[in-house]
Amino acid sequence: MPINLDKPHQWKADVAASVDMYNNWFMDFAPQAFRATRKKTTADVKAALQITDNLTNIQAATLRAHPETLPTLRMSACPPLAVDRLIGLSGVAPNLVKRMELDGRLPPRMSAADTFRDLLKLATIIERLADPDIFVWLGRDTAATKTEIHRAATIVADRLCGAVANPIIRNAQEQRQLAALKDWLEQRGYAQLPAGDNTKFNALQPGTFGFRLNVPVKLEGGVTSVNIPVDAVIMPKASKAGSLPIFFEAKSAGDFTNTNKRRKEEATKMAQLRHTYGKHVSFNLFLCGYFDSGYLGYEAAEGIDWVWEHRINDLALFGI
Image (tube, rainbow, N blue to C red):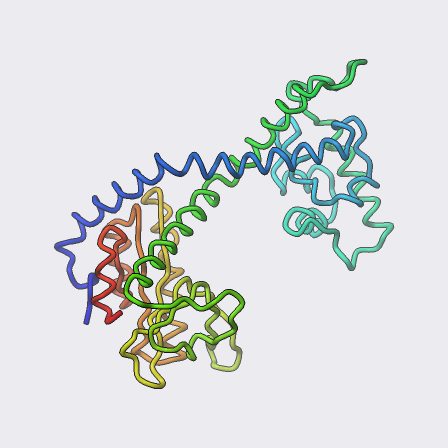
């Protein structure tokens, strides 16, 4: 039985209430989440500065020993360097920079000679572009003071966090949404799978739930299978043997533009689940934030239902 997808007359009021709920959360908790990340990032930046003698000694050997420092060094330039801009300026192998950025490691298959040559190019670019307005000790005879180092590290940390501000906020909101689901379910006698439990999604016992479980689906052609992560997998108490659990994706958004860009993600998951497990798969959304009628109509057309966080008790209508 549809819960919200077949009630467009309610959508406008729900959108307004959801936007208000997200904005209230953002004003109260988003700065706290950002500051916590910035505090940790500042410590990481200070460590990178220490490794490079406060940017006075950037060597290929240093980058080889500490590839994880590259994001800090990029943001220490004037102007700050995007990954692709650094690759273009230095002429190094793109895989080298991307592995250093994403994994904090060097490419294992790249020869030592090629690695050292490219690291030397990176070091030369970064040293040349180091921002003298932030690192005020560069070019002077006296060493950096603790106050100057802390100030510089905070500025670079702000640059790093600013580049990933949206993911920081989105991750904090997702954690809050999953906590709300957990509280609601446990108040009704449901039990969460213990940490490290390897129970498969279709082997959950009635009255249990798990977060971020992998669900195998078949790709087009039915030959290749891949795992897709699902935020919340719930097996209702009244489930019979062999029943599929109910799937929920926690979705939050701080503006209307991004939701319409991302709406195909859910439709793709729904199509993959139906193709693998049949048309009766229950794949739904748990929404908070800026989801307008265009987004809702698109998901409804794909047969995807949803629960608004400000009306979380609608979960009970799914038989949970």
